[in-house]
Amino acid sequence: MQAIFKREFKSYFNTMTGPVFTAVLIAFTGIFFVAYNMVQGYPYFSASLSSATVVLLILVPVLTMRSFAEDRKLKTDQLLLTSPVTVNQIVFGKYLSMLAVLAIPCIFMIAGPLLIKAYGGTALASDLLAIVEFFLLGAAYISIGMFISSLTENQVIAAVGTIAVLLLLQLSDSMSSILPSSSFGSYVCFFVLILLAALLVYYLTKNVFLSCGVGVAGIAALTIIYLLKKSSFSGLIGSVISSLSLVSRFQTITQQSFDLSTIIYFLSIIALFVFLTVESIQKRRWS
Image 1 (cartoon, rainbow, N blue to C red):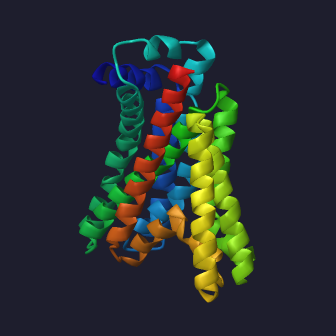
Image 2: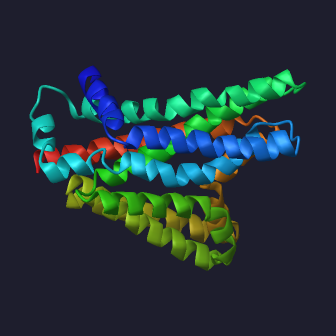
């Protein structure tokens, strides 16, 4: 895993991907810092980070698009998959290399809270925590982008797909208001989501019985709960979709309120998509 990490990390800075990612993220965060904290005198660095999440949404797909798609296109993934390393080591090596690239601008961001503190700011601990949460938000974005990259050999498709998914997650708060609010409407939406989950299981495993089992069990459980507690489904799909938003959870730090559930949610997203990436590569290894 260490060899994969070193190779991947160096490759980002042997090309323009690493330097551009680092420079653009630092530059835009610096612009927001000057605008909010220096000019307007806002005492919390978290406001600058909140605006920088939009930049992160665009930069992360550029970072992740080549993680697996390039190897698959050049057929160099066959060398990795037949080498004496496990799929877990391959995935974690690549993922940690991208986290290392993300960590570089986050380290430079520490200068912002220190400058605010030097001018009399009192929220140093909160601002440093905001940087940690920003890093975890980026780590969650990277895990999603890495998974999408593992599904295709086209880097452009990987980048566009990642932007689309991240944009949907960012807009999930707004989307929740246009979803059905009736109990039956929520039931239908959950029904479709379960079918999509079953299709994803089939794509990753090629196991018809497992995917059908997931679909049938999920739909049966959903139907039973709906029949027993129909009233609880009213507006439920909107609430669930709204809760999926990564950015809205990050925004809580801008109100100087620490929420442990936000950290747990980010870590859960990371664990889920790293696991899905491992399963995706495993499927390719044995196909």
